[in-house]
Structures are given as structure tokens and as C-alpha cells.
Length: 395
Image 1 (cartoon, one colour):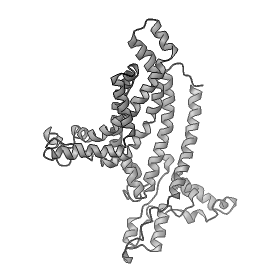
Image 2 (tube, one colour; image 1 turned 90 degrees about the vertical axis):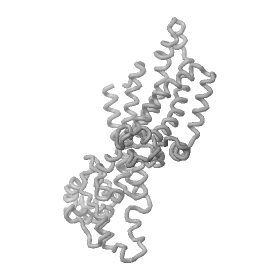
Image 3 (cartoon, helix red, strand yellow; image 1 turned 180 degrees about the horizontal axis):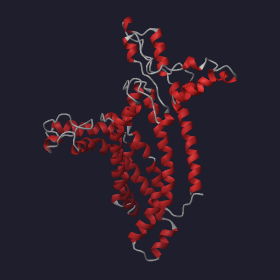
Image 4 (cartoon, rainbow, N blue to C red; image 1 turned 180 degrees about the vertical axis):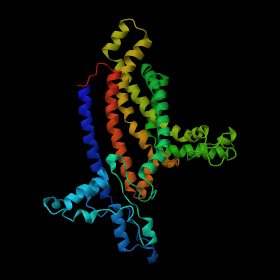
């Protein structure tokens, strides 16, 4: 097992490195960019001069060759400065930068940044980053100008973790027993109900279901004079007469207030997860119940409960583990559509906002962290296999 973990560790590092290259190249191939809208102002005096745009490009590192910009993003300005100064000396190594010497591409220092044009000065985002390898993502270009990417993501990640963890736990608690019971009682009324619900849930678009919940529990309940739920945000800023918070006398910005705000997005995601995970557990359980060792357990005179829980269900969990562990990246990345529909300030919504504003540092940070969590989830799944089924061994 130790050798396997070491080997997988090296594989994970290689996969993450390849993922960073793919992320960086794809984003650099996207049309537009952070400077695409600077000269769209109707009034000529509000437009930036070519000198201002050149200074902004230098500040953001957009004047560097792609490979050099990638290395700066990965290892930071200070490490690349040391290498660049050596490469900049006369000699064969200078051929590495055929488009210019290192000094041509060095970004302005924190003290050098600035501009004569007011709009240009607003765009002065000083990199001064220490590199992704040291967990420094630089600063936001446009969405939260001047703030570090780490602080921007940190302000949203708690909301997403609470949302997605709640959805995952609730879905598992309900989906596993429902799937087991549905398989054991195949073709019963309960099985037909579960199957119909699963088909409905899997076919239902999440954005449509989310809007339906907002209309019903947020708008129609208010119209009918019933206690209505908040349709967005994390906490209540002002208690509205007739709302659930008003009826239950819930104080704004408390734990109970957060729970009320989570009700609609958690309900939407839980119902969708239940449909998929419940049906997956049912299918896996039906396959296991036909195995010889289950018939042998029954022939030995074991109670049906022991046969189902200890022998069948435990082995039926293995395929479900594969599905559930890949929810780990989702716990960080959030549900993009759901967070957007419910105006929930999480990572998923942040990702959409960063894409719309061409804020590449935030987009790359979210994608890179998600890639790390994907490979970690794969390793966690392999470890859980050995815990659920002792017959599985990794050499």
C-alpha cells in the first residue's frame, strides 16, 4: 500500500502540472482579455492612451511570452528574477528569450506602479506575487481590483462549503437507505415511486427547478399570505413582514437565519442528488443481491437484516463511493447554476463573475484548486475501497 501511495503521489503531481499548463494555455487563447473594453468609451477623453495600455500590460505581465508568463505565474517574480538576471547576461542562455532580454519583460515593482491617466491608474494591479507553487495567486484584475485572489476566494469558500456539505450529507443519509429498500422490494409500489422520482429528478434542469422554487416559496407564498422564504444571499439585512424570519422571530445574521437562507438552494440540489445517487445505489444493490455469496449467507441461516446490511449493502457501496468522492471538488467549486440563480455568494457564482469580467487570476486559481481536489478525490476513493472491501489490495 505504501508503494502504491508513493507512486500515486508522483502521478498526481504530474497530472496537476499538466492541468496548470492546460488551464493557462486555454485562458490565454480566449478572445478579449482584461484590456478588451478599455477603449470602448464613447468619449475620447475617457479612453486610455497607448502608453497607458502598454504600462498596464507590463504591470499585469501581458507583455511577456506565454511560456514566460506561465513560469512567472507558477514560480513568482522573485524566483524568475534570479533566473532571468542570469539568462540576461551575454551567453548561450540568452537565446532562451529570442523576443527580448529579461529586463524587457520584468513587471513594475510595487513602488514603480502608477499612471498619469486616472482610469489607467485604476487599472494598476501590481503582481508582486510569489507564485502559485507558494500558494500566492496574485491580485484580482477587475472583479475585486487591488485585493489578493486568496482573500477573494476565502471570502466565498465558507459559504460554498456549508452549502455543498449540507447537500452531500443530507443526500447520502436519504439516498443510501432509499436505494437499498427499493432494491430489496423490487417492483413494489415504493420501488415504482422511487424510480419515477429518479427519472424526473435526472431529467429536470437545475435552473428550471431553482426558478420554480423561487416562484413558489418566495413569490407565491407571499402572494397567498403564507410565510415566504428568502430567495437569495446568505443572511437577512432587513426582516420583511410576513417572511419566515418574521414569523419565527429569527434575528438577522444568526445561525437560524443562515439555515433559512439555505433552505431553497439546499432543497434544489438535494432533490437532484437524491435522484442520481438513489438510483445508482438501487442498481448496484440489485446486482449484488444476485451474487452467490449473498445466497450462501442466506443458506447459512443468517437473518435477512444481516444479509442485506453486512453482506450486500457494504459491497454495493463501492460503486457509489466512486461517484460520491468526486463530490469533493464540488464542495469547493460549488454549484454554479444554483448559486447564480439564488444569488448565493459562493465559489460557483464567483467563477461566473470572474469569467464575465475577464479576471484570469481568480479563474485560474479556482480551476487549479479544483484540479488538485479531483486528483485527491481519486486517491481518497481508492483508500475507501480498501476500507469497505478488505479483499481489495493495491500493490
